[in-house]
Image (tube, rainbow, N blue to C red; front, side, top):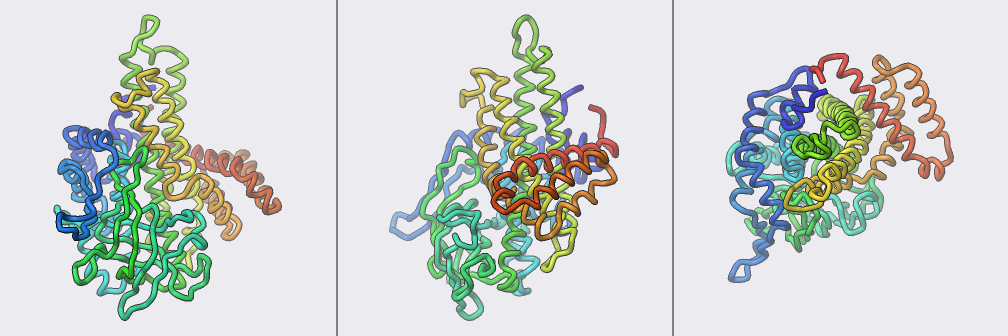
Length: 490
């Protein structure tokens, strides 16, 4: 088995996919990362938390996020390559996720601004009234230096999982717009020109059914600031995306879709980001493996490169197999999302199939990324824990990917909900039946059905093992299908 393609995200994509879109665009983008972007990414990570300039010298509120000029060049390069605009020009999310894979190989934190910008543009295009789309959507789809960024702000101090209880932000109508008042506690891509925000209209029920989704510009119609940044979070990783605390004070916003659809729109936004998180996790795992491979080929112990020692060689083979499984699962989530991203409530069965696959992919790939990054540090030995050599960064980044857009617990519980209420597991088994090994399919189907029949408390307490095994079964079956269809030699 050869591992040469590990050093190139585009080579790995070509190895895994029967057909790859925009190969010249991806190769040129990868070459730019190797020439310029990689150094800028490393410098941004070393610099740590970006500065927040809250006031100008005369005391006027600015809330300006300060990065280097090289950072902004790196960021704008992805927008210009088409990580957002291609989805709408080509009516396909596939180019966005292919570009996202390349981005995440070099800087998974940087993939966040692109993801939340796409997750702002999609609900605006789907649910915004014509005048709102005409005013704001072209700004998000620009291909020049003046492109606008989006953000998705749901989480408040009470937590992100229990949105029905935790969201305290109140929205009250004011003519053709709404005024939002509240605080968002974990607001990634703070400083964005637009954000989609979860809020509760006055008088709405104190549960998830009472939430609505709003589009909130950075500036009011009179040009003044429309939201305020309290501080920037000092995170262990993903330092290429500024994450802060946001205050809304009668902030001007616009309702997206029907008020009673709010929770569904919020989940659409989150599930798009969960798929991106899965893609980013696999790309990060590949980068960690590439770093480990480079070291193992050059490090000599007991008279030969450590890669030639049977135990480590076996570990590389096992990690590479897991990487391929993770990619198969993540890309299945991409493909299923690409089929349903235009759907609106009430959703068809294929949307519920997508939901379950997205939860399985987010859960499984994030854990794979963390374990692969940890192992890559171990391959380096003592050098693996020294910040200046860079391999420890991938573990820092991976630990955030496991939490972003819902922890493993959230994926399990949401996946259970999709199975119990929508029968998504049966849709999944039908989807896999043509490729799956029959006895293994029968066994996992029986286990899932038995688990769903348990009493509520026991069912939740014992959920992780069956969910993990379902994810592994799905990944292995999808890899079997992919390898039978197309892939190049190992």
